[in-house]
Length: 257
Image (cartoon, rainbow, N blue to C red; front, side):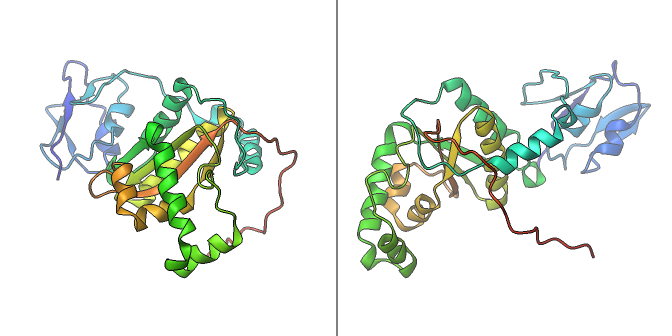
């Protein structure tokens, strides 16, 4: 159990109990008309910090900027849905580099994605100078597919394994790693939406993820954090193609119980 890092400014606290009622771990209580944080049990979710009308709460070891909340309702839900329906996996990229400020925004979107129990246990690796080496290792694996499991062999037979088979010549590759596939998957979704909003295209290279499980050399090359697995490999760049219409989809498999 993590220690409670919540700091209450009693001079500002008005004892409204909003933080107490909203704490998912029941780590706050009212003492002498002021909010008080217990010593253990806090998952550092920040609900108390976010909800306090007086700004009386701080979180130790975090940078607290007092930034105002922006509601998702400020984004047109109709436009957002149409943009999400228009999304395409991109496999053709220009050579234009992705600007650092856009990379920072993509990573920030991942950083603010939800994680179970607020574990914040997702890491991001930009392949950068090791991108070419990592792809070469994967290409070598797939070109020797006859000695590997059937799934890879069948892929190698269906596709021509070119030197850029995994990253398609894109200028940016980000690996999303974690002990939790769910947390890393959620982060990847946030990151993709941000990338698309910045005019970029994204490919999830599942074959690269497969190679990380087959090759110790590849895991060493990408410096995989201890205990982590590569959950997604996000290939990102400026699209070299423009799609004109939303594709059809099968009906949603949904039911009400």
